[in-house]
Length: 353
Ligand SMILES: Nc1ncnc2c1ncn2[C@@H]1O[C@H](COP(=O)(O)OP(=O)(O)OP(=O)(O)O)[C@@H](O)[C@H]1O
Ligand SMILES: [Mg+2]
Image (cartoon, rainbow, N blue to C red; front, side, top):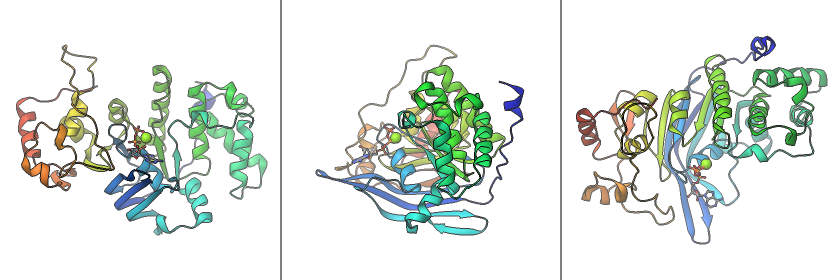
């Protein structure tokens, strides 16, 4: 890393309060077979400067939830219920009520998303500079010199050789470099909230490390408010202040990263943590959650996790539990969370790091 890149300052102003509130958000995809209930009744508050990780198996609704916040769901999807409220400088915006023009502004200046597997979405015949310039110009920036300056600064911030990368074509860059360009691009208009969908998944381990370090810099030095979507718990552990576990479209547990890793109360979260291989410590049999996630068109009755849950009883087969407080700032949706607590008291979880 050059000294120059270390000195770059983004001049991002951390927000205050609660920039984003989701209230009872549900999203369904219309398909020929029926409605896919991809997100069900999700309520979350995102506080300024915090990073929250959404974890859960493939198909649990993480991307759908992210896309609904920036209103980029496909046409067949519909937010069937709920409210999304965004706040900045004392102003409140009803995100679901924004018109097309307002949305374009919102997506770059307020809440931007780095998409899952967007690494290959770059147009191969457009240079990085043109992508950045076009984006800035389409939002009213006129001064090309200033745009170039800002673009170079951002590329340096993400620790790229800015002068070289800015005039490169996407195919000349490695996956890790492209991911860094995407992050720089998402910061171009200085949004308050960043949503990063599987920001490291397609990358090799060493490149993952550099991206994680970069995201940590955004969080710790620039105080961006972030939502990370990941099914990699180790990344969530490193980057998130709070973690929300999703299962079958619902948030089934939410708490501080420590609560989730050391004191999970939902059997599904517990299963996810036990399924993480431990690099350090004694050999331990690797646990995997039996069965597979439910069909979101024809879901099981009661708690959607009951067919896979070792704690399930008749009550679980009949009634879906709501999120209830299980500790300070810690909620779980399980009829048997006290039993999970008891089991962990007799058999504590080890550190996963
Ligand atoms: N365009 C679509 N049409 C119909 N169903 C869809 C569509 N996109 C997603 N789904 C379904 O919605 C559910 C949630 O998908 P989503 O992509 O949000 O999950 P995810 O948690 O992001 O998974 P992954 O970890 O694999 O990225 C899944 O059952 C998925 O099959
Ligand atoms: Mg996804």
